[in-house]
Length: 449
Image (cartoon, rainbow, N blue to C red):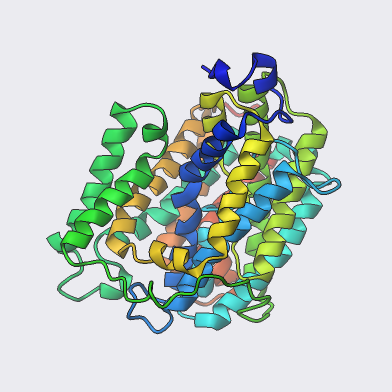
């Protein structure tokens, strides 16, 4: 139930209403806390996959700090595109933007083992994918028929399944430690398990902000345990600067067909997710349906935010669903509250020292958090699939799509004779599963039951 001390019920349902600053600022920071871990985690994972390494002793550690900074900076900027708007861009609703998990199954293989050359191709793909996302905004309403719960649920489930291995590897000590005595040891697993236990305890036995920020507080608890065990190093925090502007095309420009196709395909998925988030915010916060203008503006903001982020070495942005739930919980529909949170993110993104502090989180502590987060992605997909009428037709679509997608992900050498571009696209698992489910859903007769 909304706090009536913040305003009248009519005011609280109005996106243009601004509560008193003393209450608006904490509400804005609350939005940042709810999305913070999910926002910076993809940057850390992609940086690790690109070979930048964890720990202050890594020679490429400043590059990881930079990617963390960009995840905060451009989440804030993309959020301003949504809340303040710019012409047709932006929904003018309290939508929080952040770095998307959905793109990870495409981004990780794109940069793994390729270093900065891989990042050049990735960032070029991010920019082009963002521009394609803007194009989607012109006809977003016409796409929804091809993406029923059967398809979207399977896609979300495949995103989670593609990432759960990463969570386990990180919790055990990280892929680079594979084959060494530390990997999988009790010393590695202990902080990760603390994160999981504390997160679950807060999620189920507390309410309000403690429950909303359960993963963040769990990470802090695991971090404290890791520090006591001597696993935390502050070596680079003192050397990190106090202010740094982003660098255009920091990783260079490289056109890679597989990455571009993957980014454009995932832009469609991201756009559909944003439609759902806009609808959820309007229904939960204002008690009404979203307008076509709001949906289109939100999709444009997704694309513009992603394209701009890619230019400066940031990752794709999308609307954050956990903040949709937060609006329903607080009952405050004010877009200006979210704008305050966006400004806070931008300030953090311009301070390398803040990014350096975030990057001191050991990989096993992060692993405990992502086990929960990636598991929740899977659970969200299963929840969406619960709306499906499980007749023979839908079971066949699901079975074939899941088998092919997950099978190719688990055994990528099955396609070793295909061109490299096709290998990258198909062995992600996500793209073939999504493509098959969409195609089969469109061509198989509805009468099959």
